[in-house]
Length: 555
Image (cartoon, rainbow, N blue to C red; front, side, top):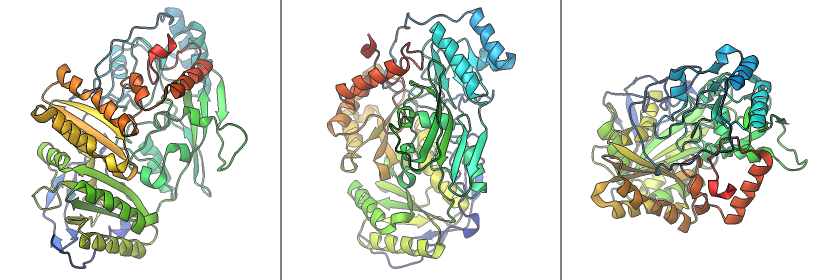
């Protein structure tokens, strides 16, 4: 192992402050990279190249009527033919007439093109046959819609930005789609305490931009932030890239307004940090995927925007070094550590081979593993000194083989483009089976190696994700979808995860894809209690049917 001497680990340009990292969204643009990296072992100029930070895949988002074409397809769990619940009524002309009296002509959509976009997820894996899309503009309108649907036993599917990966936001059959895109108002911002109150249809990126102008940030950041809605984020308990620093939405959401299946508006829209008066019911709806109620307003605690940000792109020789590096980063960087992202050499190879313009900032020879470490703090000199000391010590101990520190916002964007481009690259080879797992850190990479051995040459297996919080994204690529290959993957992946005390869904939810797999992560008693809660809050089961819980539990 070559020993590295002490050198300067330069900081990002201070003038940019808490910059946008340029993770791909439908509104991103191509940027030019130039200048110099702060190389961990030497100081060298960075060659000129261009990095596209545009859309990872043209996606099918319902965003105030705008539709984007879908060009690729992904595959996951085997499609299951779920029979339509015969207890549900069929939509008729009287229903449509009633909805028009509530919403007006414009917001009762029967147009086939718009329905086609709303009926399918962005991967084109799940597709329903809804004949009606409703666009309410207030909680009261949502209440009237649900009251009518419940009385008529019309099934509904709540829909946000439709960026999910498990089929939770599209119909299975002919459910009425309720999309909250028009409920996009910011209600208030407490500039002393950083408490934001807004409607559920607000786009995550719009909230982030608003808050940054006010000196705050959203505690949540996702690759799909340009299209996903905060209500959908809450309903799926989305994780994302800031989870390591700011934790789960269960900790940052202070209050919710939710409309129940019978139309009751449940006002839990508190803004207090402490409130111990009875059961904290908002937690029932965070992560329930719209199966217990529709979130219409949210109160969220937003952290202050910090002005010093550093991003290091590092190479490690083995996964043991990655684990030790994480432990040392938590100890040495402490309060400034904001992200610890992981990818294996197969992931890196896919990005470099299948995305135009993407280049590695390290020498062309591939290392076994790569780590992205981000620090965010309030004192540039202090943060820089901490990072320098940590990187030096980690190199001297052999935990890091090579690495660079971004010098400006463009280089930082190019680093994140590599990490965020993995998903895009993986769908360019044919079919991709995607799994979102939560595992103990010492078992984190084991399933990747297991699947490589199990599948051999018939598939390409890559592993990447949020190592800082134990969230692995396992992608298995093949030339085309094949039921025999899927049979080798499932249920083995779920069985392995359960055996190692993991969760089969870290941040994507269960949706339709994993509803029947919940027993791999939850005990029968726990699932039964969930079923009892569903029956209590939605006795007619009209809210997002066939999702989250196995249908066999209701028979």
